[in-house]
Length: 408
Ligand SMILES: C[S@@+](CC[C@H](N)C(=O)[O-])C[C@H]1O[C@@H](n2cnc3c(N)ncnc32)[C@H](O)[C@@H]1O
Figure 1 (cartoon, protein in one colour):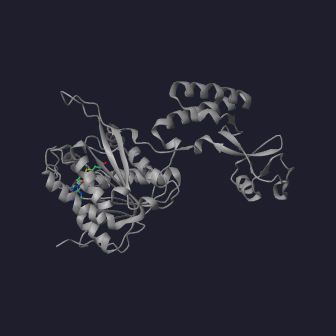
Figure 2 (cartoon, protein in one colour):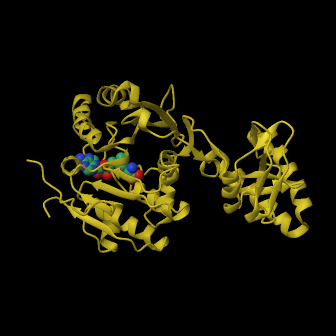
Figure 3 (cartoon, helix red, strand yellow):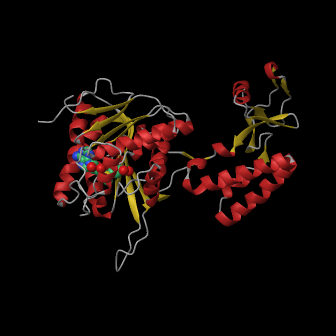
């Protein structure tokens, strides 16, 4: 008999449900909750000695996953996306299962991320793992896009470039900053093959880097007047001007730029975006570092990097302000931290729901010492709650966080 959760209040409140995720999923199904993103990092069936049951026969593991993924399909919004972290031990079984449940036509692809380099084999050292991605309905899912400044390959370079150009502008003025930008751009293009940088050759008064795009379109040449901003344009030789509405919108967004009395649209480097590729430059050990920074050293074996989960959420919410995100194998709570940081950094209003088994903490472990030292109940979910409170304190968040149990 499944235990029931009372989910009457749950959307859009950040929530941690403690207990078996199948019970939660069934309660969510009954309540007709609809998630935009479901990310899960289930036990990999590797035979590692986790305290929960991570060693099952392939059949048991598949049944365990099937039971959950069937219900997940029902609570995924039509435009929603499902991500599953997995490694070689179960990738192929999982792909076949998801093709059956979600349809081959809704398979989006598999991301490859980097794992710690180790010498664990005489033949091939496995230094990667995967994130499998499915849509509920591929033709209803918006295109994946990512701002380059949020993309691991480009972020460091963009931040470095922006910082150095701003510093030069302050010290020696715009001409000198523009010269430096041109020099740095060619260096980056040559060394790192970043040819897309080529157009970003201008610097504005605040030191922001941009390129400008002509505001004319094919059509019958026309004169254009926008008295509100004192703009009077004569007809061009062979093209017509973009609409007054578009020019006013750019003006209001501070994205209008004039050269020789002619208007151009500014495209800022910080807004540059890219398509999404399958090989991701995230490194699993970063997940451990993320926890270390919050004072939770050595408490979890395989936490995911916060930046990886942020990336997965961001590519699916490029144009969405308030997504509902579910992680029902929450572990240390990385997904909640990712949502909190995105809301903080990007001004979004996403909500997270996490589910975590109330596994008992065994004696003679670092988890046990930590729980005792911090006066926590001896259950793994309490370590997660501790982490999330640490993040909330760090980001100074005071929004509601509900903690619920089945039957309460
Ligand atoms: C691989 S870990 C997830 C790690 C997580 N992604 C992170 O970054 O910390 C899987 C988690 O799922 C939990 N788990 C396993 N079976 C579960 C179940 N039936 N219901 C809820 N949680 C479960 C385990 O206790 C474990 O903490």
